[in-house]
Length: 207
Image (cartoon, rainbow, N blue to C red; front, side, top):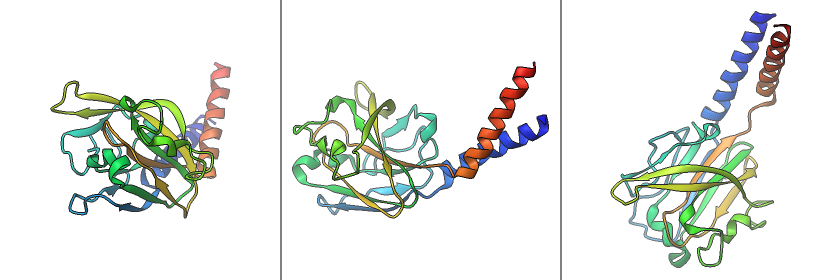
């Protein structure tokens, strides 16, 4: 029984990691408007980790202190010059390959979404059904050469469906938002992990 428990737990954890780290969540990216001569934003499959560059047009900005559930997620190196897209009109559209969650990292210096910072689309039901929800979690951005050089970004999350494309809105001020996506683990993975944890609980009760 103990060996079976270890096997179930190990397999469940491995499959959980595989589902989150290697599932291709972001299958397409389009940016409209803005300076076409600037570096194009790009998808980094499974690349969200401490030290991952935040932007295509800044080599001194990187994500740090990332919540464990986002490690290994697909993310987008956005263009920081789009931080004034509320004026210049840039827009990002992302395509989703699997059911899961879309995350937007918002600079806390912007405060709550408002007509001033143009982030009202986060809670707009027409963008994503139910809108994004502010999770209460944060990711840290290290931006060398500035004082201070560390900034907190609130994580906003929405459930998304495979095959859909979502248009993300504008921002005015601070540093431009980040984008990431994580998959929902397959039911078989959850079952194996759950059985293993139940068995562990049973063994602990015996001792």
